[in-house]
Every structure is written in structure tokens, then in C-alpha cells.
Length: 136
Image (tube, rainbow, N blue to C red; front, side):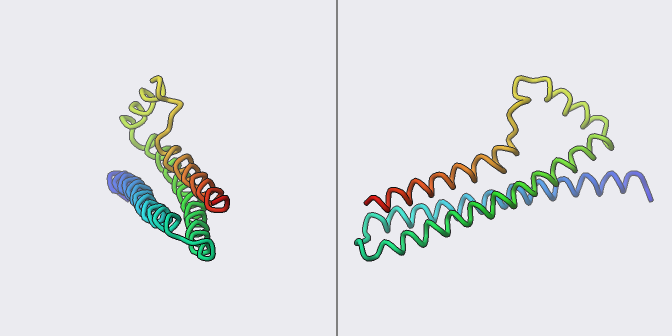
């Protein structure tokens, strides 16, 4: 096996997984935005006997948030493994990572925020909307 073809496959695999992470996240944000807008419109127009529609959409939103949270957490795990492999295979990539780890931003991970914080915050938003709808 050619060393360059191995390196190319590792790098391409990392790019693919990173792209999948971002595409899933974008799909999630789009879907959640549409659901939140639909619930906002419905909550304003629903009568008390029709609240079940709002409850149903909220439950769907919570389920989608949970599923994406799990998917993104797994994808983050895969990405971190590939990043470690790339650090072993590509010395210049290793140097770049070492440089970033010395910066003041080393404790903030964008991947961590997109995999955990955003889905979690949207789930909290769904719960707040549910509480609002129950009390309305």
C-alpha cells in the first residue's frame, strides 16, 4: 500500500465526516426553526380544545432534539478519533493543533458547542414553550 494513498484516504475520510457533521447540524437547525415557527403561529391561534396539536409538535421537537444530540455526539467522537489519527500522520497538522492548544481559546470547542450545547439549548426552549402552552 502506498503511503500517500493511505494519507489521502485518512484526510478524505476526515473531510467527509466533518462535512456530514455540519450538514446534519444545518438540517437540524432548519427543521427546528420551521417547527418553532409553526408552534408559535399555532399557539397564538389555538383554542383550548385544540392544544393537543401544539403539544404534539412540541413532543416532535423534543424527540428530534434528542435524536440529533445523540447523532452529533457520536459524530463528534468519530471526528475526534480522525483528528488524532491525522495528528499522527501529518506533522504539520500536529503543529497546528499544538499552536491552537496554546491560545486563550483552547477551552472552547466549536465542535463541542455544535454537538452538545445547541441541541441542549433548543431542547430547553421546547420545554419552556411546553410550559407556556400548559399555563396558557
